Image 1 (cartoon, rainbow, N blue to C red):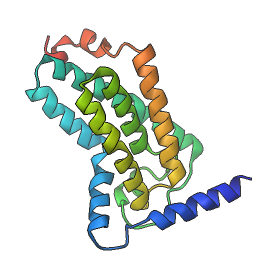
Image 2 (image 1 turned 30 degrees about the horizontal axis):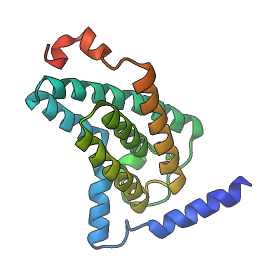
Image 3 (image 1 turned 45 degrees about the vertical axis):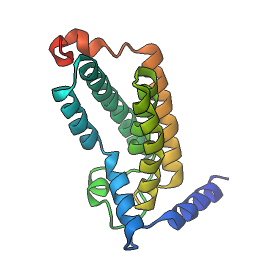
Length: 184
């Protein structure tokens, strides 16, 4: 029963693929695929922490901590499940450092950020991420480093992690332990 689903997943994912097709859609997919990278978010939130007011500093610290938590959970699941990435040339660094594709860490990270942005504000940031997150996830399939089921699984994981962080974990603990991080 699982094999027909995996075959359909692989076929649909291959139909979405633009990694080997030159043109604007490929370049747009590359941009969105990389815009979900953790180093990109880390650098961006570092800039926010440097130039933002106290509220933005606190938000930046919370999001960096949440990104770290999400990364550990997603990577643990990837190494337990061990689903190989689709064959391809693009994304050599992903293929070398992280050969497993399920669940998509990018989709998990973006979905988690959507939940936290909606919960912590500002509203425009949450709305922006609601629009951005699916583009990042779909670009990962378009560039051939994930299957559709990888991004669906990653998105579900990210929403669950985001909700658990909002409901159960006081994300202020980083600011309590290291108050200078949050501008206090």
